[in-house]
Length: 161
Ligand SMILES: [Zn+2]
Ligand SMILES: [Zn+2]
Image (cartoon, rainbow, N blue to C red; front, side):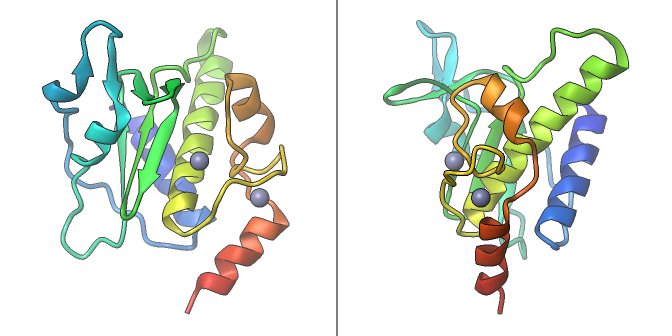
C-alpha cells in the first residue's frame, strides 16, 4: 500500500474518531479468497485475515484487489466486529497529476471513515452528504465525502464512556 495512502487514512481516522491510530503490520489477502472466474476477492474471507494487533480495539485493512460479497457485484469495503476492510481498486481518479491524487486519497479516506464508523457502532445514514451513507457508486463517494453528519457525530459521542 502506498505510504501516502496509509498516512492519509491514519491521520483522518484519528481526527474523525478522536482516537489513536497506529499503523499495524502489512498483510496480504489470502489466495483462497480469490474467485478466479470473477477476478475478485471475497471480502468476507479477506476481512477475517485483517491482523488485529494486541491492545488494538479495532483494525482496518487496506488492500489493492477488487472485492465482492454475496449478492453484490463489488464492495468498496466491509466491516464486522473489530475488523474493517477497504479496497483502493475502484477509487483511482481519471484525472492525472496532483488533483487526481488528491481525489483518490479523499475517496480512500471517505471509505475508510465509513468502515471504521461501523466499528464504532454507526449504521448506514440516510444523509447523502454523510460518510455513513452507503455508496453504490463512486459518485456517491465523491458527493458524501469523509465528514460525518451531526446525527452520526451525536451517536458517536453518546457511545463514548
Ligand atoms: Zn457501510
Ligand atoms: Zn450520518
